[in-house]
Amino acid sequence: MAIVLAEVEFEGIKPLLYNSFTVEALSLKRPEMKGSAGNNPEEWKSSVKVTESGQFYLPFSYAFACALNGAKMLRKGKGTYQKDVAATLEILDEKILLNRNLPKDILSKSELDDVFLDVRGVTNKNSRGSKNIRYRVCLNPGWSGKFRIQFDNTIVGKEHMEQIFIDAGKFSGFGDGRSIGFGKFSIKKFSYIGEKIA
Picture 1 (cartoon, rainbow, N blue to C red):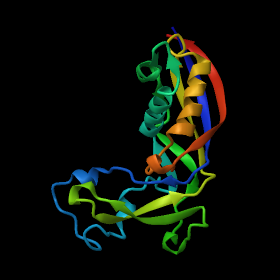
Picture 2 (cartoon, rainbow, N blue to C red):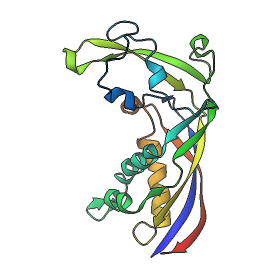
Picture 3 (cartoon, rainbow, N blue to C red):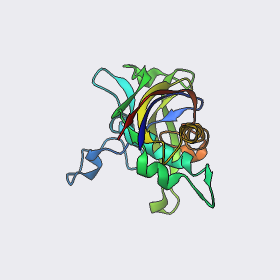
Picture 4 (cartoon, helix red, strand yellow):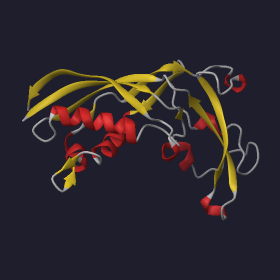
């Protein structure tokens, strides 16, 4: 068994929408109501991922889930590589740092800026098709980052793993709104760092 270490560098080619699930959503205490039902202008504050210094990041689980989606595209006999990727892939960086920071004046930003507040109506399936207003932080194309991975290349070969991440960026992406084209990225570099015998 040979464990391969690699680094994946990516760049966003479509806008990235943040709508992260937070622990506060599980709280039994009702939070103080802001705005009105289905229209909370403060919503984005609890769904964005930034470091203490304000740098945007993606949780490692986003990269793992994205790779599983990319693995659906690569055929292996009558199936795909999805189970193999799930069995061997490990994302080594807990936080995948992006090249953008949350601006202090985000409310004054427009869709032409690198980072802005995306406001749109979304259908609420629980209330018979009525619409809610969603406030989400959006990063325009050009957002980028990198993360390290390791995997057993006797389960998934190097070339296949690289193709899986290429397909992941092309067909899946990161963040919210992926079904309508948000979050797509391209792989700028897939570098092999080394191998270790396990």
